[in-house]
Length: 502
Image (cartoon, rainbow, N blue to C red):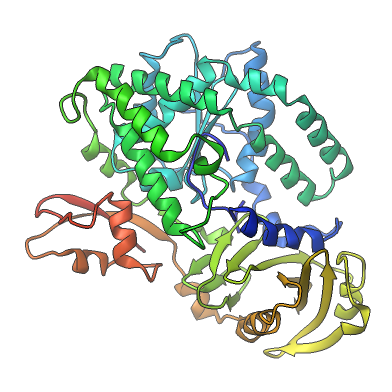
């Protein structure tokens, strides 16, 4: 269950309408001392990188590096830990090394961390801390596209954008400290703090444009295709559209909304690239060695987070599964599984440990639900499991609260709809009816998805290649997306393409 900034195409619940329904779930929940069992499964592996890819350690005595070092563990925690794969780490190190040799500040050292997140994201902290998610690596189609992202983030470091940002946002730092002190023993507080720090990683529009200019120049000077920046911006925009709940209106909390609009950035990136010549006449893409470096890359959710397969969420370690209604978009985050659908409906699923074994009706009324309607609390059974249900109402939202016990763990479904919406009961019923324990054989059959590089054979078609994809019902659309193919493109025999399978 997974836990923004520079290059970000992750679809989080976006426009004001969608944000409103997700915020509604926050309205319902009060601070609780119970820690999420999903969060607990991550803590043992979270920590600062012990194997930086560019330098053994970032500049000692540099206050900027100290700032980055201080926030590094929280950034890593908010993205589900680090992703370790020697082949992929060497690939990213090779790309970054070529860029550092021609950067505006050759004395600046960098520490690059691959984050174990399917989000499409990359960002920088002061002192040379660079981050790129495995989700971004999976979307990119060659080394020059990743180089475009890294050179952009390096530009933020060399231009001291992080320092300027910090001076402007001292109030945010103070607020984050308050969160840390008040909720220091609560993992939810740590997540809130991490989110605050990620907000500090957002730059102004002018800073983004400056980083675009510096980044494209560095890209070309390193010998990479300078048009890769514009190309990958297009890919990220297409991905954001693909994952949006409502593609025509969604403006997600990603680079499309927090940065200059995508068409403007793409055109400016192309204009900067023309200084090196016409498109296709300068620089290498590094496609062959890039594809070799990401073959086998984990795609989507990791086993520790559970898996999203279409409208179903499954977790082998916890031994559970449930389904959301058709048309809902599931987002598996560190702290919870979130889902949104038409009619401004939002769902949150998480879990807490309850060693006291109190009754579930007493648990619902114990103070963690605001707006609770006491007379609505009732004991129920969910597929043979002890459970309880209640209704709540707060601000302009109505809620269904369902809790289910398995052993000493309590699983919680929170469903939010606009007041008076007829969608509350059928949505909550779907969740309850589909929630069940999975068998040991079902758990053993769950395997993570990976990027696999295949060579196109004579007779292969878009339909046959995309038909090998797993984990999505929109196979052809996603195949074209991850291979940056337009509607008229046809894979040529002998070429190599990416598919998603186990």
